[in-house]
Length: 124
Image (cartoon, rainbow, N blue to C red; front, side, top):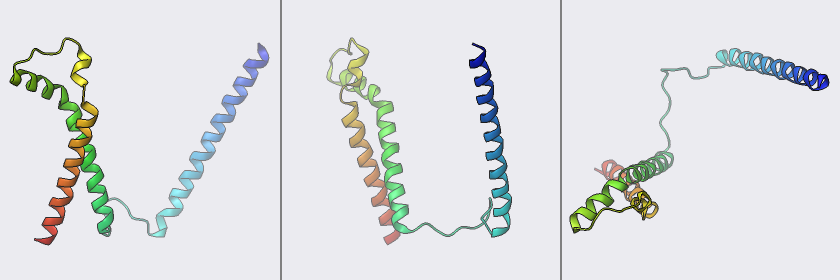
């Protein structure tokens, strides 16, 4: 038992020493980078290339569409069942039927709409 305690203390000490050495190396690298002309907060940067901007817009829009559709799917199920005059589901899991495909479709539509909007604004 004493051997395991001694080994755990040694391992903890080794981890702390390694952590301190890594912090010191990162701090030194940060200080060395300060004189190399690295950008700082508030400095001007060049614009992103068009293909990167469109890709980012597409994926961010798609993710936003998926998240919003998934968050409101249960409300849509309840609203649709009320409109057609059917009773609400008895089990909570019934509210999630079709959520995956509906969320994917909504996200895809949202992403395509954002790309078309961005393209039409550039042309106009």
